[in-house]
Length: 282
Length: 219
Picture 1 (tube, each protein chain N blue to C red):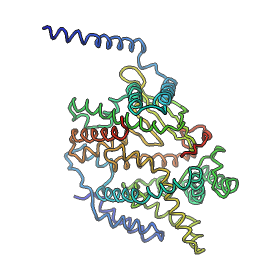
Picture 2 (cartoon, rainbow over the protein chains, first blue to last red; picture 1 turned 45 degrees about the horizontal axis):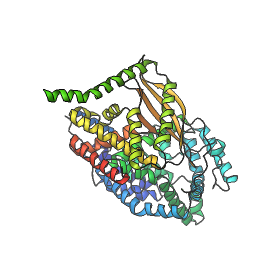
Picture 3 (cartoon, rainbow over the protein chains, first blue to last red; picture 1 turned 30 degrees about the horizontal axis):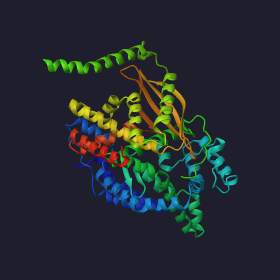
């Protein structure tokens, strides 16, 4: 007995690989291929609690997702974690923050496009203001000077835009390398790789290597920033996979909620405080 | 007969202590739950953070001492039974009273070891309460932010309610939109489902986890 989503899951990935030219197409193609690897068996109808759980979990491809999750975990443990540790060893916290700020500033065009597509014009204005301030006073984006001035940043992506437009999650999906996602956000990731003006510019000027460097640096920088949190969840959970599924889904829902209301600072933070004195040991 | 008497006598101090505690608790909350205000909830969280920083986060503590201090704070400030029922969801009903008790103990120990470990890496973070609002009949949401050295403040929301004893208690912590209780509920329920809903399997896994954490923290 197959869940209807399970059968349907095969086609969107294939569809995506036709319309995206980016590197993500192959990733999604792989995800679609692996879909064949397994579908969760729905619980029998006479167990309403279990059926409710199954619906709420919304993870019809769980066996495949678990395999991919394990694969990612292996990849992180043996590839990204050692790399992040080297990165930490050679570049102190201050330097890593400059890298993160620079890479975040490069994302501004994509964020702006999504702000506008979401109809969040205030957020769009914030994105432009930050881009101008950080690119100039922030020396080409390496210093986020806007946040201390009371203009904190936000992120926006295509998956989020699709959600603001009313698209549901589809179902839970673990992407190779990228980790927890869902059908909508996975598709969004594919579309996004075709949306970045900077990528086009680099491609057109035979600077693909720069685009690749940026991709790798972004991955390393992002991973380094949440590596400790991942370790924490792994250490404290009984079923790491389920804890991450729940956690990433809640986090995503909160982001989408912010995008829907157009909030441009985390709504709980009424007054941003200046970061305290830096700890040079970290 | 003599045995029973000596048993009674030996327990008398305890019984008296319990009575005393109960009466002082009653006197502390004469009007009961209804008169707690959002400001009380705010003060409660502020106080909790101060106590944690003042006691648990001290640098020169042994792991055992740190765990003990956090345990006291946790027992006094969190609604363990309510959180446990939420986390176990439908399996709470199928669990025997003994299993429920075991779960309460192990779950508490998990939390204590986790959080004490986190406080070990204390680097001067502090907590500012920004807002509090009523949430349902007996509950409040308290918004706060953790100010961290060299990082953006992290929004943390506390779900506070009036417990059975009339005191304010934490029922959940929501960090950047992620609820601890919901995450644990998913985690434990999946684990249980994978083991045919056997609560004993969960208890065994928890016991192993607690032992591991004790071994690694020395506490």
